[in-house]
Amino acid sequence: MKEKVQSHASSNPIYGLGFIGAAVYFIMHAESFWMGVWGLLKAIVWPVFLIYEAFKHLAE
Image (tube, rainbow, N blue to C red; front, side, top):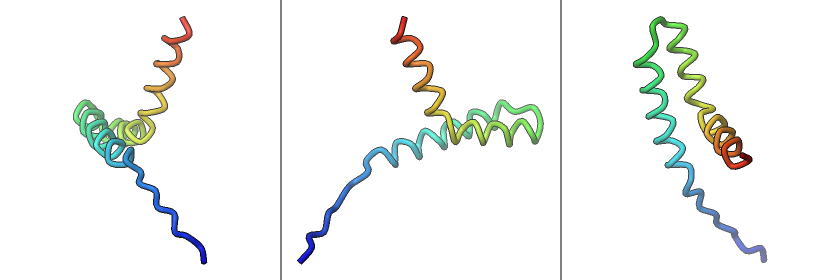
């Protein structure tokens, strides 16, 4: 009999709230439709930029 393994991803709601906040910020500051689309794409990958900058400052 196999045991069922449960995992709880507690970081998903945090990422979701961050995505919503970043999307609102980037879209509100967009000057055109395509800048709004670009802002939405940036909101999807904002953690990449955050981690990159954190590692850059830690390496100094």
